[in-house]
Length: 307
Image 1: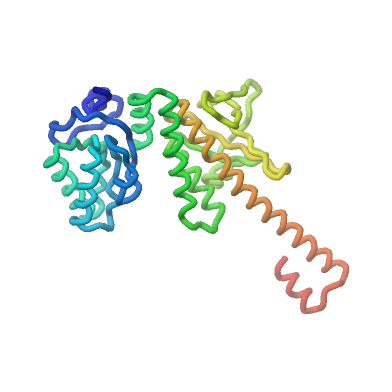
Image 2: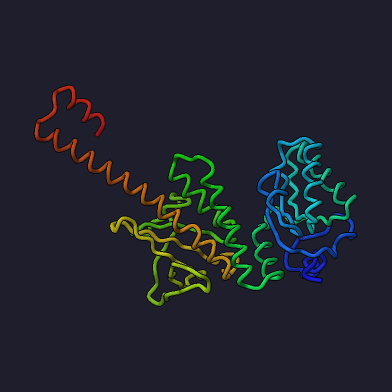
């Protein structure tokens, strides 16, 4: 028998994790761990997964439809559920009771965790218990890739907002804050209004994570250990992506997350800086024409208002 739900409970790894169903199914083997991101999650499972959910993904379903999905999940021989109980609507409360009754009828264990505990911390822990490190890295890389892709699946025309969402999502996955600074070490994201102090210390050192990575980081210790990735854009602009070990030490799997956001982040920053260069050139051209008198009176008024 491999790693079971009982083993997870007995590990005492996560404060506040508790069994809220009967214990008839706690000897089920955990063969994987997935966050439920779509109502028809059963289509994407191989079998034996421990499923993590706040039930919000089922929020628009009626009881009958949700039961149909639970029946399909049961056919996949899932090992159990880890839930966050969000009691902000009567409908979600009813869905929670539906889930609990179904699982007790079918001997499926249900574990509850506090709302502040990240699903990703549990996933990282479980993957390292049920797989060797290389398989765990591969499985985790696929999950992070899917999570980042979901950000781009939602059409967002505001690049600033997209960067903010990406860093926020990365921070939740890592369990630590992720911040972007410009070349002068001014905080840009997630909240540029905060005057966070940042420097690169003289005793900082190069750091290469133990994963298949295209990137090299800078590691330094200030109030917390920080991992820094310098990002060059268009050979003109420099940015610094900084992850601070405020809550948890970074592990190998965490650098898969950081590697996963660097390419899309570089792409979005390139778009932003290209647009800024275009605007500067456009305004310089207008200023030149205004100064050399090549505009009509009406055009001069229009340009003056624009500038």
